[in-house]
Length: 93
Image 1 (cartoon, rainbow, N blue to C red):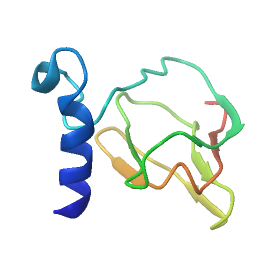
Image 2: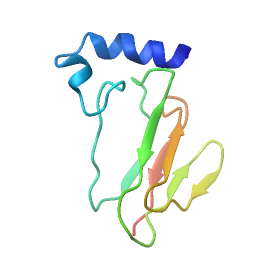
Image 3: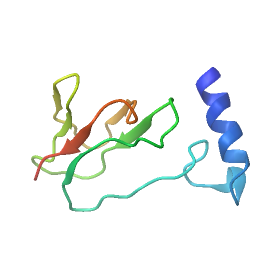
């Protein structure tokens, strides 16, 4: 509940407010047929970010550096983590 309220307050000051496709998040990024380099989102709120996997593919695993996890996500999986504190990337598919 506290995390939702923090996100909600932030989203309310943005243009379009609750009409955003990403509400209550402040925004979203669509990565289509790419892999990413190791990074963390230092400007994200402490609530973190979510990754929704869409599509049928092999590879492209989500790697979380500090906890040492490699997540073999499949279509429909939703992974939520604190991207401000955890460095991450995804592998080639």
